[in-house]
Length: 524
Image 1 (cartoon, rainbow, N blue to C red):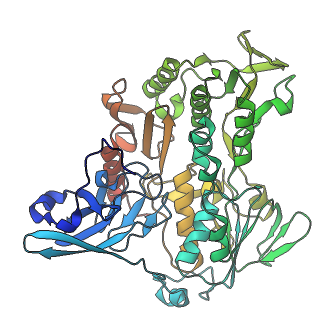
Image 2: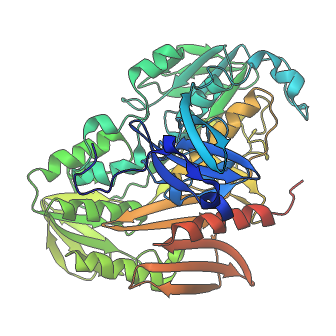
Image 3: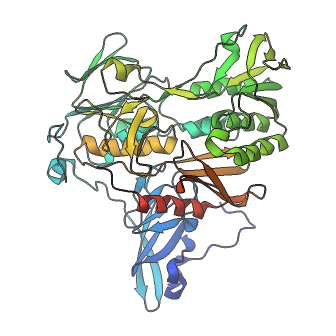
């Protein structure tokens, strides 16, 4: 329900002057009780839902590319023609409405029913533009997904959206269904998001789409010759195609004197709930590590009124990823909210609730959270004999060295057409998009994964968007003001732009992503 102070929304059934849509302008309004936007593209008129189905971002502020629109917040992409969510992080479609020219106006009519089956899986093989030499052209009768995170869920969702009707099994080591992991260190941990916001899909989703989601399923062996996986306890699942999406595990520290039960890590829904429970009575917390996760945890704990001390070995938080100036801005931002930093220090030992740092500082805390990075979960891939190189090696179709076995998410190292290098990226949106592409390729689509990496991080009321990948950079150019929270930061190496971070400039982030897509060299 709109706030009484909100201006009335424009009734689009009354029409929009065509001149208002000139130059790519987007007009927002309502159709009955729905928020809708209207735009013209190459002479065609479109009327679609006004909000992204991911976090409700305003599509009126997005970027139109060909016959799609991209969300300004987290770069989800929707079809203007069908409303389909083409690229994660959005998984659900937006609505579409009939629209026609009446004189010099564009008049919106009734909502168009969403298509029930856009594709037919039965014709997949015949439509494959470049048949694989490493897999049969026959449709797989059974697909197994090992992993219950972003990549696994996105793959299962896409398989059914693509019309796959065979047996589909998800084996997840977690004890809860796939969840909105970025929220675990942000709103949920801060206490502003309820439990029922966290599952990515309801239980009905898996039942209706006949996805066999098996929780607490620990896969101990992958036999690529016999095409089967074995669970702890001996149960086996056969597959024709398999997606390996085992994710990553938190790096665990051995701190002298520390009771393991007092040290918290954050990866799963259960981890976040445990921190929330401990935070209920905590007054003082230590966050070890200045990773994005660690700093987001610090912000969330401050939102709960807890005194927070951050301990990190680096000179400046996030300097390796974001550069010294951006890192110092993030530190200053946290300090303005009451966070105390202990940089170039580590926790040497703990005695009960007392921590002694490497510089002899002593801190007392009721809660200790460690966010010192993650390592890709490669044990299963190594056991199966897959080609590894600081991750699972995949080709541009995300297929591993074993025929019919694909990898996506935190474990996958792929040939990135934008940097010209093999990279592995631990980002939520990357994992989801790779899961979607892997799903299509398991059905013979032969779609190369060429998405520009994207991630976002939230610190209090400051959101940072980052596109591209700059594992190493030699120059940082800042356009605008960090202090003013309005800037674009470009990371270059040898004069070539590798990545762009933005604060308060959503359109600049979208345009930077698009520029990287267009400039990408062809990768064989």
